[in-house]
Image (cartoon, rainbow, N blue to C red; front, side):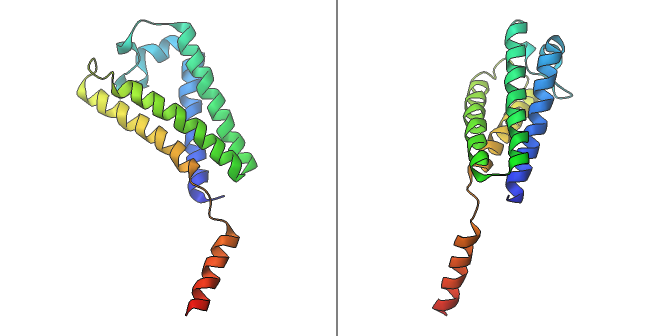
Length: 147
């Protein structure tokens, strides 16, 4: 497994467990104060809906569990599937928030876009195929014979 894939999976799992655990197990607290020190990004976007917040928490926990599975099984296909899931989610999540920043203070809007951009980037990293050792060896062999 490439170190980059390992780091993307580990960070995405930590992110998902943090966000998902907080949203699922403490929905009102998540609504009132997520992400914590950077302000409150959820409560400024509409009324509290426990069902919706717990569903979002469950979805994040599922993505986190899948990322942990990718760390355990360490197979390139798992990385690509996880990359696809995280990238689709990250793109849609980023796009929604990018078009709904008017109600937020500037610092919160910037923080939210940076955080969501990082989350999206983790998925994109997982989509990058691993360089196979045989392809790498063939390329080195071709380079040597060309000299």
